[in-house]
Length: 418
Image (cartoon, rainbow, N blue to C red; front, top):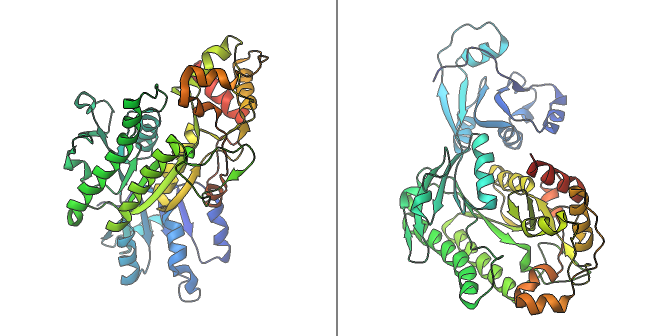
């Protein structure tokens, strides 16, 4: 591998004791120069935790270079996903090039490769596009052979969870699985469709697990990040729920999501890290919760449902993607609520949509009894109340792009009109 001929934007870790301030930057770098000249006088420069912080500032495909790295450091870097090179010494014109060319360690960070299920859905398609733009390699699974080539620069593979079919080549080189597959919950809940909502989540998870278990010694998957839903929590008009809340299968959606999460937990038995994202109401200009609400609201006919006081824990689609990718980069484990830090009442939610559309909002809420007559148990999707905490994601230092409903709505509506 040839060293760069020009110095790209870089992050320099120096022996100056003020270097810790540099970690406040959220920017990722193409090259990190780790100055070890102060290693003897300041051994903390070589502490593993500090080096791990440095890794996180390096772009996929980026370069790490350092003087005087010991063999133990080299092995640690290799274990962290870097390819290690020893380069012959040669003179350089600048400090950076001298470091790169002076028989130092020269490391290229491994490109991340993710397998995505549900990649052609609302969230999946946007996630693929953002991941590819960051240099992440993407494999995806589809139940339709006609869609194998439908995503540019991503490689598709066929699977059919209902009969256990899966192209095992989909796991080749994959580090992380993002599991989004599941039938839409917005279609009428007939008896047969309720079974599909359940099986599409549980059976697909079970098939991924059994397939990886069968090839345990020949894959490199280290983590699975699975979609889940805030519908796992009980409906409550007052209480705010965190990830620690007890959950019970008291409704259809609670039953589905609990069974889904239980299947995902099985991956820990084959030494794969598990993260579960309980996603709120996704705001997107391509569909989601706003799809059926935009048309009546655009005509000045927007209205809440029931008493309009139910909690709406929403999230902008770009924040969902940001949370998923941060979970990939930092190998999160456990349960996380992927919701905005500022949930609102349904009345306020519809009012924010009307404001973004520049339309009046004056109609009273649609009566609860009428909804139940029209759509039966499916009415729970708009009548249930969920006030959900995002504090655990905030504690992970995720910075929301759209924490407030009004700015999020304006962004979505403005983009849909372009």
